[in-house]
Length: 243
Image 1: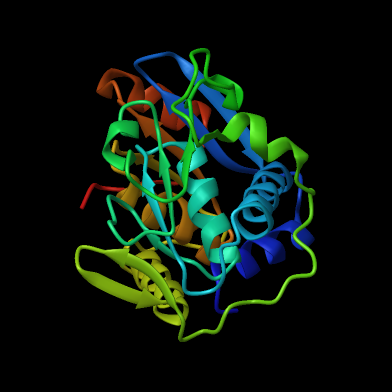
Image 2: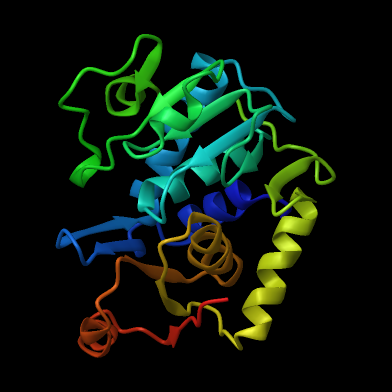
């Protein structure tokens, strides 16, 4: 399998009800848990918005100006599902830019902008958005729960632009498997990833769990005092060191 979305679909076939992403924000007290099926549902709807609502085609660029957040993981996987090249950061040549409340001003001149409130449960913005900016929470519910018809992108297509380097889809999966091997992970590992950086979260909290058929607890704004009890209650097998 050569794309993250194919790995997700395989996990959906094997065990759709198991937890996949558990997200904490220690600043707000938020906790949300998404099963494989629920995460896949969000990805399919978001990919539908990209492909059918915003006309994103394979090779187009999608810039994610988001923090480490469960919706950031959804957007990365959705971009890859439609064959887009995802950038975790500002990209002046992006066809679609996705921003949170704190980064909207950075994409004011972008051709297509989708805004995420990052409120609990994916809530909508409470204040009006600038003209032409789409509110993700209002747009995404209307798209189907299944991304069909679906054609996997080419393995040698551009997938992730990070730190001046572009990885293909095949290289993306290889990077995930190498990272998993470096961490000594077994199949089904449950990871604890504490980071505020989306690029780090995309690798360690999305790609690595997909590569090993595992799951993740992603923590933003971690309070270190919570780590031990959280690791026990969430049955963590590996706490991933930052890198």
